[in-house]
Length: 304
Image (cartoon, rainbow, N blue to C red):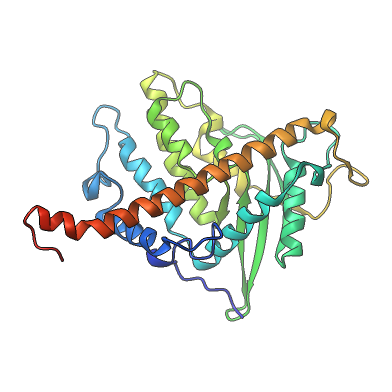
């Protein structure tokens, strides 16, 4: 059976179980429909064309709306994989983590174990290590993430999905203004999707960083530029099914890789907060929809 590459309608968004309950999902779909029809968020359609006249950068409300739109604009297969990834992330225990690097781990323990769980779930998943040389205004660097190769038997081609388990960490900046902090915290905790959709997130966050830094009369550093961010996922990479620089995995050592345990707790907590926020949105949307006709009648208006 081939992949379903269609974009998920608003009514079906999150239909694949971001939590175990399906109550209120239709209401959330209606809310997203409203969002898409009005151009996003409280700013309305006008906010999609607005910009800060003094700075020349897009208004923060526009950028916030764009982030929300990108989060909802997912193809069916992306939604399905995201649901699986989030579920698996929340099942990982500290005892499951193994040392995979002799030096700084940077959550590699979590990535390799998650990739293993994804393979056990039937996905062609691997940990990708990317490295690029500096050139021009782009500093050299390296990055590590998971990718999943999905085969579409109907059209005879593959689709590659990026899985970044700590997506927000790529966009932390010094002395961020409140609007930037809110935009960053609205990003997905874990990114799952195509490189093309990822590029759209990167552009929004670069614009948001420029706006924030300008408020503090600070220039955009090279390692926050669009070209540098794109290098993290666009550079040549190697896929790894097992540890990169060690003969075999050692048992998890709190002393050696204590930061992985802390990273795991932090990411799982953030995922739980994200899910609670989604459940709250469902309830809030359901309340608004159920009470809208009554409110309109009280105001003397004719309910649709």
